[in-house]
Amino acid sequence: MLNLKLLGTAAGGGCPQWNCACRLCSISRTNPQVIPPRLHLQAIFGVHGAKQFLINASPDIRFQIESEPALWPNPAEGSRNTPIAGILLTSADLDQVLGLLELREFQPLTVYATSAVRQTLEANSFFRMLERVPNQLTWIDIVPGQPFLAGGAVMCTPIGLPGSLPFYARHTQGEVHKIEDGHALIGLLIEAGGSRIAYTPSLPEVTAEMLALYESCDAILVDGTFWSDAELSRTHEGTPSARSIGHVPIGGPDGTIAALASLKRPQKIFIHINNTNPILDPESEERRQVLDAGWQVAEDGWRWKS
Ligand SMILES: [Zn+2]
Image 1 (cartoon, rainbow, N blue to C red):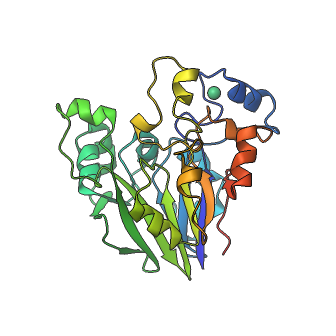
Image 2 (cartoon, rainbow, N blue to C red):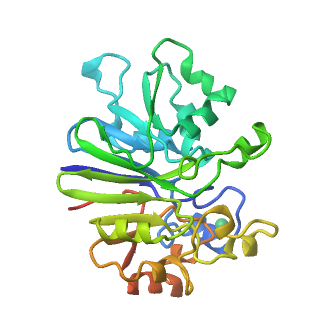
């Protein structure tokens, strides 16, 4: 049986975001029962009762581990141990990798990433903190389209997506480092116990291939960062549009709801929701449209039920 759980569902900044006084963040601070606060997106998966895998490591990872007994060390196994069998990275974005630095207490870690993502982190001196003792960090290279077994029980297939390395990597490496398309950003297809789930928290475009892949799934966890293309720049002048930073917005004639309207098989769930996104407000017209279109809005603690 596949265990897949979300210990956080927010995009960068979380909700509320520390410097944001927008209506949604303000309500989330003062009336959390109306707009529940959200931690940064963090998924875990594995077979029930066995060691678990993290998908990325969010800036909130320490709180997320403490909130989830399946991730606690076991006193019967000595003073230092972890049931975390490995960490799968979908990009080198800070929101996906900062939590690795929180896990630097000399614990052996196995991290699965494309060679482009691995090289980006290896080029950053902070990550040497994960290599202070022998065998502390084990990298396993993964390749888009090539399935691998996680923990011997869950089949994972990286889905290559168009996208470039994050801003910090572009600066440290001079000119935009030439990365083969699909290697800087991936989604994951996760299969076990008869369940097939697509995990795509960043979706730069909906291609015919993605549509076919989604239709083959029991559930799809999809980029719900923004409702509209201009949402971020409206809240914070000078910031980029949704599409220009690799997120198809949810609404509008060419948004995700419209582009994925033909899907019949999968449960459709939005994840990675930015604190500017009006679907956070249960009373909003946008939330109504999402629900009317047959989508769910994942909350922290969401769990796959087959
Ligand atoms: Zn806000």
